Length: 365
Image: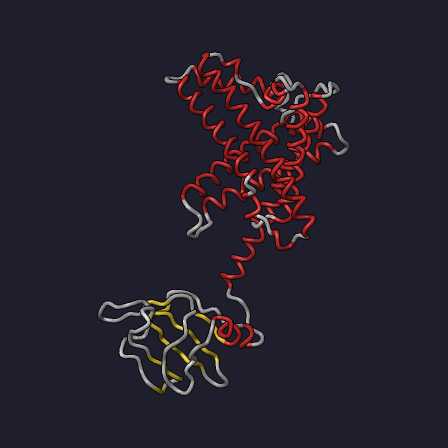
């Protein structure tokens, strides 16, 4: 806060933001109501021993300023400003002051969304760890399950209390969709640009679809077709549309771009900006950084590979070229590096799952 420029025996000149916060209440933003145009004003209410000191300060810095105490003193030449926001009263000044109701409600909403976001990250971590573990078993030749979301859900269903765990995942993905949707709709600020809000909206729709599919699996109504078959069916339906080949090709390019962005951002450690690294020890921060880099690069590679197969399906006009997560992961074993590339990618997915758990703990929500 700039130093106040006013006169009188109680002028709070040269008071900084820190000194104002202890004994003064800052009224949010005021606009003065005068008969002629002029700069907007901000009002600072200073609670003294027996009365308040009200200072009308012009944002221009050199405009008309005044200081009034009680009902006496110098009066402003303009009309009194009209309150455009709620007065926030300092609890230090009053001793037993209470926060306004809108602040309490906002705090409760934020806490609810925070819990929802953390639950969503836990659910995401469980699925990625299971998919990575299944991919490792496939690479070593000891697994027959599909290394995709449905294969992971089958692994969960086979465990004791499997149904309960499945419905817990349903709740987790629903919470993730809720949190992403709230960020897209409710979050404001100069850093929340339209692109970021649109991206959060797309993620909310994605996790809503995952939540619905997981609920269908838990209810026993979606156990027939595999992820690869579903991917081929969707591609075939899209190819039958007018300009379907172009639509499928664009979708493949978008998926390739998403994978590249995910890998590059992970390699650049951009995820650290969203984590509360100040609450971590040095060793914990190094561990979380390694998890985020390795897991993010592997995740991006899977997305990009899936996009390449969709693009090939568009070029060849063959829906059977499209592959789901399981077939995409198995394709890594058919490279010159053999199954070891699949092992590396699978371990990376496990790392990303553990990183999701770390995000549930230290992510700024």
